[in-house]
Image: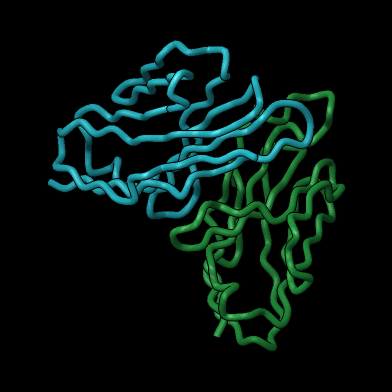
Length: 115
Length: 120
């Protein structure tokens, strides 16, 4: 069975602070995909990143960066110099490969960025 | 319009009512999904339609009835709901369906803004 744990229920930071959202996963698949989605107050989840289990290179996209460590089954997400517009719920998700694979979501981390 | 559109955005219904949620995608995607989002819980996958065929029914009570008349539209028919069914219902679509020849695990989902359902 697959499982995604986001232990941080809610994080509050002041604008311009860096913040890291933790994600730990469990899977028996040797090949799998990891995702991060953002859910702003408007409701729709927005795709941020997909990472294949064979690609352990860290990725940076603007103020966003992701640290994938297979040894600790973690796929953490860091926002540098946070802004109020980053306030949202962030979901980490996991899926296996092949046909018919379901996406398993974590419970989400509510990030509040204040002025 | 672009993306995935859900209507209504908010719905309040009694336990004896019958209502429907509608989802429309303008992306040319081949698969559509219904998810339930309750507070403090992971998103729960309810149904998946791939090329208009239902390929996943995640032990959802029969008071929820999906319908996919074509690849662009998805409905969730609701009847005799319970208060615990109150939640945000999210529709999503993906380019690839649950075809075993395609690595569906890599599917990126595009979500609608959801329909907030309150059952009194």
